[in-house]
Image (cartoon, rainbow, N blue to C red; front, side):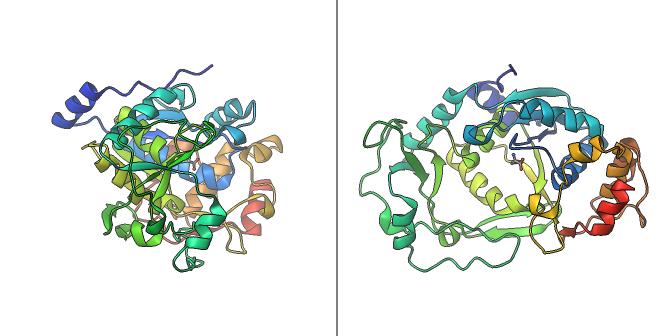
Length: 342
Ligand code: GLU
């Protein structure tokens, strides 16, 4: 129904490497359910920065996790973005229609010896973990078990085969993580350093469902679309380190600038979810809340206003600045909810 993303073309990539890239960003919703206030916060800020700075804005629907994509949700996601007042210059595109482009990236990784098939189960990986990973309450902690390097195969294949499982059903492929830290400067969160080898070890880039993992798909898609600006929630801060590893392993020289935003949390400190009540944008709009009230709350959270007051999307775009935006996560309070419903 929706067009596929542009096909990966190495010649375009080379041209991009030698001429200054067009500043480009993307709105990349996962169609896993209705967008809630936390999603809206990130998308509205991404859009405002793009319009302020004149970045080309592409809409990409991240629909690869097909087990979670419910029918009708893509249209609903787009309608919600429009209701908020957002627009875009290209798209929507979806990821699911062009799996060969990701296979092509896997070929490149396999030829350079960066990836290998791994049929170990989660339990086997947990049992072999050298030390239990102590995930803290920190927003940025990686909540996955570290993959013990002793579990690596003795031989690494030089070609990618996505049916390379015991029963030809498909298998996970992992990226061989080199020791050392990946460092980058986030526009909002400042200097970052992640030692992925110690934190996480070899991570999955291709899944046994014969689709790329999120980490690989996002790099291939962002590179193909010439994305220079990635703006998203800080739950993906450590993913940026994994994604930069993949850019380098794939030989893609145009790496994006990252801007990670505070998450919206409930009063229990947990990430906004169903347990905090119905914070879906659709539910507020259905019960008569205006989009200006929602945008007004996002403006209040961004500290561009001292009080909650209705605001147009254009006023938000004009007034928004990262200078006032907190770096700490933001709490959605009962007062916020009452104000939206008043
Ligand atoms: N699809 C992800 C989300 O909806 C965003 C991924 C990204 O921006 O890299 O949270």
